[in-house]
Amino acid sequence: MHGASRHVADFYRKTGVTSAAMGDDPHRLISLMLEGACKRIRLARACIERRDIPGKGKAIADACAIISHLNGSLDHQKGGDIATHLSALYDYAMRRLTDANLHSDTAALDEVSGLLEDISSAWNAIPQDSRQKPGVGAPA
View 1 (cartoon, rainbow, N blue to C red):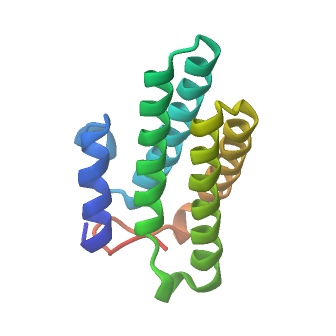
View 2 (view 1 turned 30 degrees about the horizontal axis):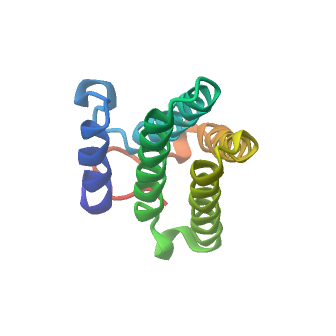
């Protein structure tokens, strides 16, 4: 992997995915990161329900960190309008997660989770032969 992909991989290793699970597949890495952000949002929701404020804050901070790294991995030159729109969605998601943290707002968590699940679904629907090959730079 090169550039932004390596940075994202290093970050994700620190947040709980082993390098064996990731391999060198940038497409799989992005899928794992989207899945990881959704998992942390579900955890934040559970923390709100059991009134675990520190747990909620950590789960939301972890989700925001993952989303920030997803945003940073976008290749605006190759990705064009898609990258621009994804960046705006990621920014919006982080604002909504901040609101969720400040107000223990489960509706905001559900909204962001739905957005990320839609992105993940679209990402995973990319045909295998159209996906970026391992070691060929950052995902768009």
